Amino acid sequence: MPYPLLDRIDNPAELKKLFPEQLPLLCQEIRDFLIHSVSRTGGHLASNLGTVELTVALHYVLNTPLDKLVFDVGHQCYTHKLLTGRRAGFAQLRHEGGLSGFPCPAESEHDAFVAGHGNTAISAAIGMAQAKKLKGEPDKVVALVGDGAFTGGMVYEGMNNVDTLNNLIVILNDNKMSISKNVGSVARYLTTLRTNPQYNQAKARMETLLDHIPLLGDLLVRALQACKRALRRTIYHSTMFEEMGFQYIGPVDGHDVAHLVELLRNLQNQVAPVFLHVVTVKGKGFKPAEDNPGEFHGVSSFDAEHLPDPDVAPAVSFSTRFGMQLVRLAEQDERICAITAAMKYGTGLQFMYRRFPERFFDVGMAEQHAVTFAAGLASQGMLPVVGIYSTFLQRSFDQLIHDVRLMGLPVLFAVDRAGLVPGDGETHQGIYDPAYLSQAGVPVWSPCNYAELDFWLAELLRAPDGPRAIRYPRGGEDPALASLGCSGNRYDRIFHTTGARDAMISYGSEAADTLLAGRQLNDMGQKVDVYKLVQIYPLPNDLVQELAGYDRLLFAEECVATGGIGQQLQAALLQKGWHGRFVHRAVTTNKIDHADVPRLKAQLGLDADGLRKSWEDL
Image (cartoon, rainbow, N blue to C red):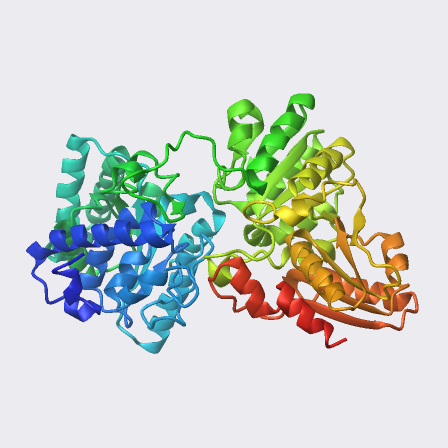
């Protein structure tokens, strides 16, 4: 598909060669490209469609990489990547060998900061702006933050420390607020006036003149400022930002690229930190995404001409199975509550929301609050279940220890996306939770199939005893593991050969690879037993005693090696006086590609072929 303007742009300098009146057509070409490209590869669509004009305007005015553009979360960075020479990589977006779905400094000098988790952009941008001041660099730092990030406390911690950074611009991408025609017109007129350099110069001269009037001058300045704040509070509700030290501007139309360019050019002469409030439509230009932005936030490949009905029940996965089972248990126990941190659909908790809305709580992008809020519920006799991605649970580690574990409160952590995760790369991997949960003394279960998930979720809520965690992978169950059913045991020997002196051990979805590797080794004449854990911490005492009867053991897990369950098992065996050979296969790098899970396992030596080859090391 030809893109007459986009085809001419391989870097921001070429963008600047376009005439302003050409920019709306370029924005339309970018939208067409994104819809066509993401429909083939999958990725984050709605958020990127909503920020096309804003990103074009930023690159038309700014001079990256000298000026720094910092994205919050980074879901909306695709237009930025298109304008900075990475169009070819979109053919393999979020796939091995292609582009990361998030800003990645290792990928381009135009990417100022890694952005996979939310609430971080303002703090990072403040640090960059301060560094530029210290080094005497004149460049700007711009933080682009979605309205969802303002549910997290770190945003306000950052804004409370903007100091007098007149090289900092914070842009709120607000895709929830609608502006009436009249208010929008008034806001646009006043915004244009207030960002005009001549206005700011006249304002400064007037305040200086009034300051020199004896007695009344200072009173007049304060009176005029008070009137201005009252008017702005009425029209924009903006005084919070001004009280934090910002010059507030907006709200402005985030799809009027010409007006955005004008504003950003005027802000090159800013005298204070600027808070620019931009209103956009999530999914802009693609009606299915505009109508259902949540459904088109992160998508797999799709046929744009034959879209599925978003009201049809989603495919069964560990997430949806968890959500439906939790509803069944909540029907039997009115103490059960569900908490999510802005991931209602991702964690399968939409079923709880529909069935028991009074016992469902979406606290926004605020994982720390989610955990301590759950602790408060538990302290008053409720049974809170915190549905949360493994990668995001990391953000509330202190609360998990201090507010839940030390008090022994019965909070159940339902840890979604546990283990290796495809597409999102190094920022979203669920490879740390077994290590950090066990270090905090939180018992952890890791079911390998739906039957075990159903059984242990019910069991952990039936007899709550302090904090517990149940973790499960993204996607559906493996057929080989599904066939095992659920024994109700804390571990099982799932493959046995008479006379075997060696064994392989794993848990969760990795058990499928150990099972396959064990069968292959036995077909090759090497007698190997295979074990699968469900309770991974603390390790069952009888398991350690049983494994001590083998000569050689291989433990495989989708977890960091240091502090992982395999390392803990080896220590327990040594304490019992075991002197056999132990090989631990786990994740030994933080640099994880955005390939699919089978490729990630192959790269890390955690697939069946890699485990079979590891056996030779024994």
